Length: 389
Image 1 (cartoon, one colour):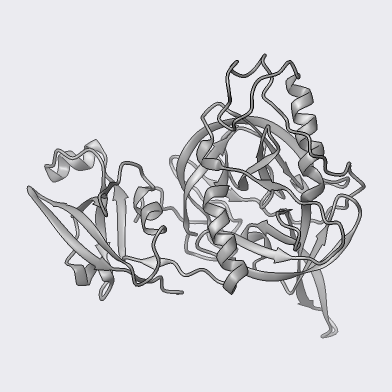
Image 2 (tube, rainbow, N blue to C red):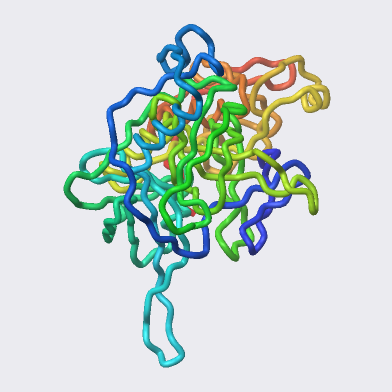
């Protein structure tokens, strides 16, 4: 188990002594209205709030005010931010089937073919998906593919002159950089909501709550962007955007109660677009994602665990469980082994193991650097396909 592994309650809130995470699916539908069409304006970081040299996104400072920068980003990106209504069937008292809105989320159109990137939990269980644009148009959408493990999905609509948002480079983000969140917060009528904040942290690892009524927790999400830009129910699947109007993340989670009755403030999480883009490409190509499988449960090495195991290593993944018959078992990995590197790449962050494995595909052979007590071992494992259940 990962140290943040916690149980979800029936109301989709996960409780923990550290944080609780609430999935952002609003229970009611919202309507939209006409918004400004997309432009090609490049927005730069204002001199008053940014450095006087090139910013991480490659832009330079100007005398444009921060308010103007956010306004221009909003005008550029908001037309491509859609409302997604998840419609599911119910049976009336007279035995007749009818569809009702089961939840509302957001999404962003990212190409001229009408592909929309969103969260899996926004579309999960839908019998029909209704997509509404800020310009007043509505479409019945097709689910191209969904990946519960990364909580990402792609849906598609067909229409003329669809607005398209530009996908950016999340690897260039820096802590303290300004970002804008756009989405259908609380499914409020009148179109998407725009909020602004900063990148609070990078490379976060968080666990989602399980599906409604489930007694099991959801998947771990890695390489997450933490932001204090206000995010609320209904924002799920909406874009997190830099001041150049480029999508750098997909809003997914918000922190809940840190302790009973104490609500966390200003802590939201977005899936980095660098993680989302290859998943979206696989979903469009085949409708599903093939995840590599090693077959270990692990936790990040910390000083307390290192002292308990009597090792001097500072980074790595401590193996807590090895699945029977898994690639790790066949390779000889044992409980309490510390995986310090894969293919020579040190595992120096909490999400490094998953991130490194996800750059491979099933059937690839990887070299594991193992610390077992005082022994340093090299093991080779041929990755399998992640089980679906």
